[in-house]
Image (cartoon, rainbow, N blue to C red; front, side, top):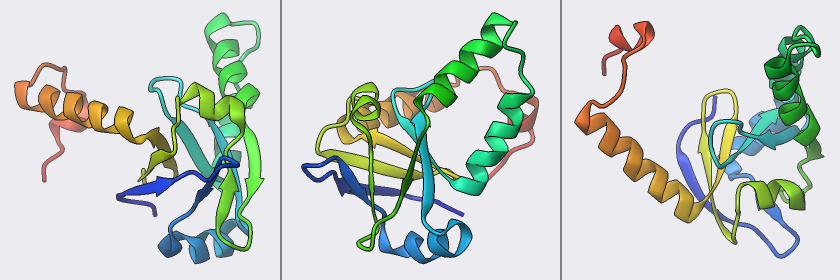
Length: 152
């Protein structure tokens, strides 16, 4: 499980160093095989261990290419999906088109989301967190059924 927000610098080749605490787990679970794609709701990227991504693919294959919204989801997620493998230094290359989509600069945030990571530009992440906290404080959102039963 991945949790926490990690500040990381992309190197000049666009590689991201996976934090040491996740590396062995990723090697054990997926031999360091990862898939990166766009987030369709936010200006960030999603980085999945290969087995988790394969679960997404099973859902995507069930969508109809004849229904515009479903085809759009397939096109966005599959069309941007990029497979990569952690190198011996625990780095993975984030392809240029994906870096451009998320407007990644040198300073990025790798944010654990249990079964995947989000990759954010550090400044965009800070702005998003500010908006999220403000929204929570103001209560200007509709509670889903799952959130109604959620407490800390």
